[in-house]
Image (cartoon, rainbow, N blue to C red; front, side, top):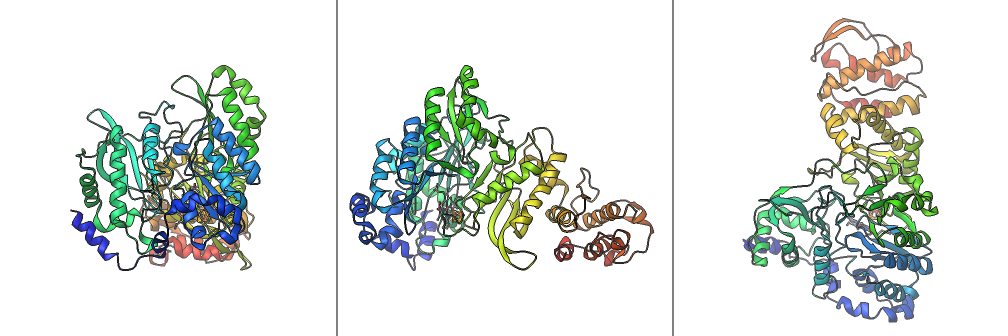
Length: 640
Ligand code: HEM
Ligand code: SF4
């Protein structure tokens, strides 16, 4: 079987990429061992390849005038002592700034070159590491942030993660030897709290013949969820299997075109079966076929920040909007973890922090703590599940500021549509690289440049909807390409209005999207719904709101949707009927009134002629003259 892998590798071995050539220049640890020297010598002592590649193996990213540092936090578990140290380091060397990232780790910034070795030493003193957090390495392993604690946790994965970390992370055999970055997740809980299908390698809680273990999924990347590898593994066997997976990818993964060398591309060429066969051979063990995945179809959504844990204590989920945190608050949160909790914190993939092990009788006092009450204003549906990547502020790829945009939108939605239960995952990436995992958000934003009404280049987004992270993961679809952010926020508002109106009690947006939006309407119809409301409200200053219906007659047939939307718009804007009667789904029209293109504008002068024309085309009595596709109408609406 590995013949297939060998052949695939051969086909892609014609030209090594530049990074591979750089990698051969030296052993990464040599550079790590020279950190004091580099710090003392400054930029003059910094070799080009160290800045471009080798320092990144240890989490250090040269930003030109200062450094950014990624700190590895396995499973997002942090002791109060470690958290305090991160806070102190941030205050001392990083202008106080801390980012919480979707790999459940932290990012420190603004570190002067003279301080790089000191910072790393101070971080390492408390048992943390920055190894393998950048470039072609095995990145921080994520799992359920309430691993071992939550009621829905079946297998505590932290011992597995620790075992893997001890074998891999500081081992020269593995530092910088992969063809590309390698992301891993291990989920031992029923609820998908770490985007488990979004990694190169995912172990997903499953059951086989009454035994709990993991099904293996492989090969996610931006726009692609991981695929079922049809392999079941018991907890104790995960580290051995994992090493075999790494070895096969290290051996056969492509080292030419870096745009196409994540594991996904190897799997595309050889098929997942051949890859898994090679892994089994490498592991020298037999594995059972996949068991039944236990991840539930409903996303667990705690209705309050206070979460009862298995041992009778509570966790408190502190919401840190867009993951923008700071040293003072990190020190304080570690104090609170020690004073009220078990002395442990958990970072989550949605860029928030759990304080765990709080006793019920101390909760009242805990709630009154200044830090908790300061952040309590973010205990709101629009902040709780928002994710945002770095953006232009610190990332050279960024097209929009992003974190501030995410915050603005959350504040805007909170003021526009009051909602106190449910769940909406708003995921923001400032460019197509997708570090803010916008592709699996309920509503996803990918930064771009757009044109405003005057033709000026402004910050914009491609708007996505319908990402799924539950049992059946799914990438979101594009709702609108290239909208100015000032417009996009209204489109989101209309989506949320539909959610607020039609949702079942405690239904998440993810469930609502499946049950309602994408079951009853075509994507194009939903896009038209948000666009036409934008035109009515924001362009024409009208108070009319065009609602979706819970039982549309048109049932996802675009032509019928257009017709029925048209009839309802006509009625909404004129208070008159377009036809005396319309019967059936394939409409039989009774007494059509002869109308002209500008009919709606004539009856209601507030309606723009283009909108009138759109409605004319939507409701035309002659089917062949009627608009067939929404895109035709969208073009008209865009001219308003
Ligand atoms: C070629 C593709 C990619 C490039 C060039 C890229 C580049 C970057 C850069 C430059 C940063 C640092 C920005 C800053 O904090 O100032 C960053 C951070 C980050 N990226 Fe990406 N990225 C890519 C793909 C991805 C993908 C596919 C994911 C996962 C969904 C991802 C996840 C992250 C995360 C979690 C961070 C925060 C730091 C961390 O915890 O590791 N990136 N990325
Ligand atoms: S998505 Fe783009 S802007 Fe955001 S961190 Fe990644 S590379 Fe930077």
